[in-house]
Amino acid sequence: MEGAQIIVLATPVFLLLIAVEYGVGRWRGRNTYRLNDALSSIGLGIMSQVVGVLTKAWTVGIYTVAYQHLALWHLPTDALWVWVLGLLLYDLCYYWHHRLGHECALFWAAHVVHHQSEDYNLSTALRQTSSGWMGGWLFYLPMAVLGFPPLVFGVVALIDLLYQYWVHTQQVGKLGWFDRVFCSPSNHRVHHAVNDKYLDKNFGGILILWDRLFGTFEEEDDREPCVYGTRSPLRSWNPVWANLQVYRDLALDCWRTRRWSDKLRVWFKPPGWRPADVAERFPKPPFDLSRVHRYDPPMPRWAQWAAATLFLALLGATAAFLWQAHTLSLGAQVGAAALIVAGLWGVSALCTTSAPQQAPAVGQTA
Image 1 (cartoon, one colour):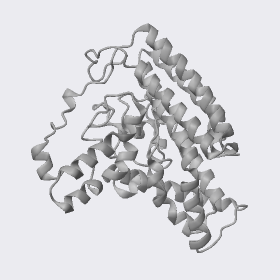
Image 2 (tube, rainbow, N blue to C red):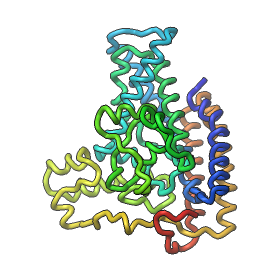
Image 3 (cartoon, rainbow, N blue to C red):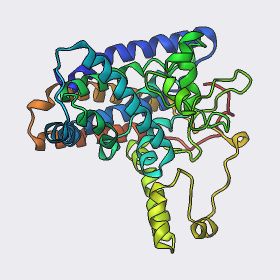
Image 4 (tube, helix red, strand yellow):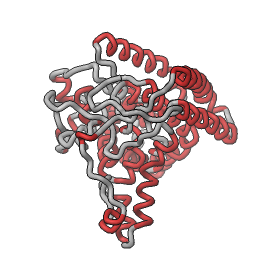
């Protein structure tokens, strides 16, 4: 079965758990959902899956070619230890992929999409990049060289991805010993926070042991609530702009700086680094946590219903597309993908039909 088809089968479970989390939050008086933000996050997940159909030949193809021509061994697919070791090795590679996604501006430009939501709930887990395919494959080449077959790689990658869904919630507290070994809701809340104390911590996918081993672990502190989002807020629901914002900013700094060495460094320095001459001519205000406000333009009732209705139609169209994508020609795939993305753009427009109003202060919920 195709990976995209597995995602289609898992989608009802994702949505059911979102409904359960929403109900629990309302019952507890701690709702963490806003319609506009949830539609944006899930829509970016849809866009990521749709683009993934078009880029699969690139990502899977590179791994397969490396396995065929560079592998030191060809490990069997019928041995349990190969699958277990493959999952552990994938999780280690994912740790470094994830960590470089926060420490190198070029990789951050792809990964930032996942962090743009200023809410933190299960819909945030579905908020995925559409450009990660360009460089993410680099981090998993060691698995190909060590001889893990493409089938093993594909399955353990899917397991690692699906595991991370449930940790995106504020409704599950600390879990004792589990938090010390595994990526958990508490550990991953820290990862999504922009507080100085929490910034760039807890990169593990399944195991948090990698963070403990490499010095990037930070425990959630009840005295310092997590504030979610990014330090350069997106302030838009547009899914295309969400994927392009940081690339645009990097390209502008690259163009504007006078030193050729800085034109290169812009892309590989940590996020937030800017050439001195650019920072002087085009200054940005320093990040101030006390001044952070969520982006939350009001939606009239009719726009809420229209956005939700269009979104449900797009969800059904996406499920049909992903299920049949492997039988379609490239032209048909591109056409269907373009229509779905255009529909998501329409949803984002409906979510911004009114002039913005003062957003609630940090810590308040809808």
